[in-house]
Image (cartoon, rainbow, N blue to C red; front, side, top):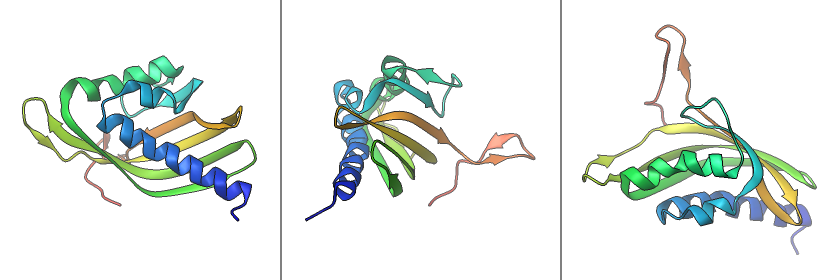
Length: 146
């Protein structure tokens, strides 16, 4: 019989997997259910931060607009789970085919997820996405793979 912590970790892993499902289906309602209403997001694109679930969904909107088909892959998800908070990190890549038919292989990014258990449900309360930074050129390094 799994412990509560094991059940919670399995649920959080399912939640992260639902990000891919929501993106691949281009369904903002699936994504909306994953985030706390007051999420603070430090996404890969401007602004420096987005606050609230509607702002987070606005960051995902270009995926729905520009892509005909979407793939989202998460690798090496590592979690630490407490009673009502959890955090994790992983590598993620968004790829697919643009509406003009151009195939995009995407780039690997680093993602950090912070979860809060609210009324029995694990929701993403904070996330951060980044790429390594080359201090000599002042640019992000986007060709790395996990």
